[in-house]
Amino acid sequence: MKLQRDIPLLSCNTLAVPASAQFFVSVDQEKGLRDAVQYSQRHSIPRLILGGGSNIVLSKDFPGLVVRLSMKGIDILEQTSDNITVAVAAGENWDELVQYSLANGWFGLENLSAIPGNVGAAPIQNIGAYGVEIGTVLKGVHGLDIESMSMRYLAAHDCELGYRNSIFKGALKDRFVITRVELELSMHDAPVLTYPALIEALGEQKPSAQNVAAAVRALRGQRLPDPKRVPNVGSFFKNPVVSDDAYTALKQKYPEMPSWNVPEGYKLAAGWLLENAGWRGYEGQAELAGVGTYAHQALVMVNPGHRPGAIVMKLADKIAASVKATFGVSLEIEPRVY
Ligand code: FAD
Ligand code: EPU
Image (cartoon, rainbow, N blue to C red; front, side, top):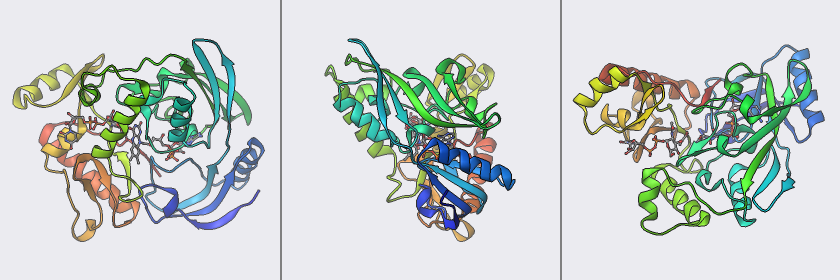
């Protein structure tokens, strides 16, 4: 095991937080992963499993072992004239997989084009965009169960997938390392067209999956900053769900407020709430200098000043308090904060 010490993590997190790791190891095989986990157990130090670092906030230097997963490989497990099942290693880049699948005539991932990060992290928050979540095509995951130190397969229906949620953020948080993801894709080009902005962008045409992928890329380009140029972690808060009563009161006061009826009540657009509480395009001053929110999407917090994660969190707390005071709605942070 090639263990490194005091490794800067700025280039390992898309928010460009200048934190460091006490210990760091990159693993490309199951054996290396086991060794790394056992090392952290032997020394009783915390562990951070790292993919592309596009959904984490490092609020301080990490006082333990960062394990970066870099396993590669895409295997076809089964193929019929209708479907194909593929197993993809955790360290593969998500968007490269989307492009590879489209190039091979495997369909189902097109709406999830251009989401940063690695394949192994995709089920953690059940990545979703433009009307599709990975749960739609996930067959199951293989991974290391840290409690028993044995490899385990979890079928998708046991992953407790929800909106930006899964068992890996609940009962199996920090207890299961996904090493391979199995996806069941379609051999038929039949795009999902439910997201209003996507339907509008495609106009009258009967689009192919390639058209959908291109439209999603274009929409994302308008709304989300490229982390290479403007450090960010995508949406900083989840879209909140409120009760029927809370919704009715808000809708009376703000008839133009976007909302969606969901089984638990109404889902609101956190971006709209932030913008209407005055936070779109905010540029921090004084202590908050160098952090802010994106000019085209209030929900995206940006860190052009490469400020520490604690400063980003200070602004996040301020924004959440302001939304609560203005609308009475509580916001939940989407990325994992360490
Ligand atoms: P990391 O940030 O490395 O890890 C995230 C969390 O998962 C950490 O807690 C980590 O410990 C854990 N983890 C990572 N890999 C594993 C593994 N193999 N096993 C167990 N735990 C693991 N998300 C969406 O859902 N939809 C979007 O549209 C979207 N758009 C985005 C746009 C931008 C510009 C950015 C920067 C982010 C966006 N995201 C979006 C968030 C992010 O891309 C996803 O959450 C992605 O899946 C994170 O992958 P990662 O490899 O970077 O994970
Ligand atoms: N809106 C505003 N002002 C803003 C931002 C948004 O009024 O500053 C309004 C929009 O006009 C629209 C509504 O809010 O009516 C929703 O906006 P958008 O379509 O941009 O989507 P979102 O809800 O802000 C979610 C996901 C994104 C995902 C897109 C597309 C969450 C927390 N975010 O954003 O995921 O890409 O939908 O499906 O669910 C991520 O998770 O990191 C992420 C980027």
